[in-house]
Image (cartoon, rainbow, N blue to C red; front, side, top):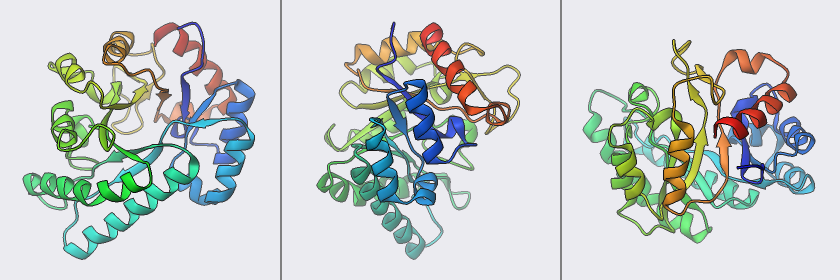
Length: 270
């Protein structure tokens, strides 16, 4: 991997930047892809976001995020479906065919029902997404996030949800931070052949400084990133590789420095 043609800045890595600054930063650093977050797009406005990305010559690897399907009552669940439809429209407008789904936590103690709500939410969203040329990328999260962010906590669960649909409708997003621990990881990556819609990299720091904002730069932790990348590529995935890091220390340094580190670490450890 001698070049950067697949490298994407997932915008959360430079959380201190608004989307305009992130676009300009990518252009300066010659990072060809960007993965915006919806709240950053909203701040700038959808049409302005689209124009600035296009003018900078950047490509959009994905939009983060849809999902958050489970809720305590039917009307709230419907609100979430409506918001997901807006997310699909935003993804299509920005020129990406991948909407990342962080599927959402359980509204109460009933995790089985919450998973059912995720399944039903995806079923409602698929026809709308397909009509906009957008694929839904289910991103399984690390099990420690089950209570707060997603009840889909393994590649096995994500694959099972995705396999109810055609690969051009629903797939999975492999984020090394969330899946590296899984004893069945390589079998599940093989199982996802033809369905991998995204590959995200960062590292697992020891000790982990914070449950949410404790990800490290690639090479600073314990994940076999390049082994996982090779397994993902063996399935036929050759798309963008997003660097997605939540880390207060990284957010507090100049973001241009972060992009320099990101490129160096990408070449050495991804």
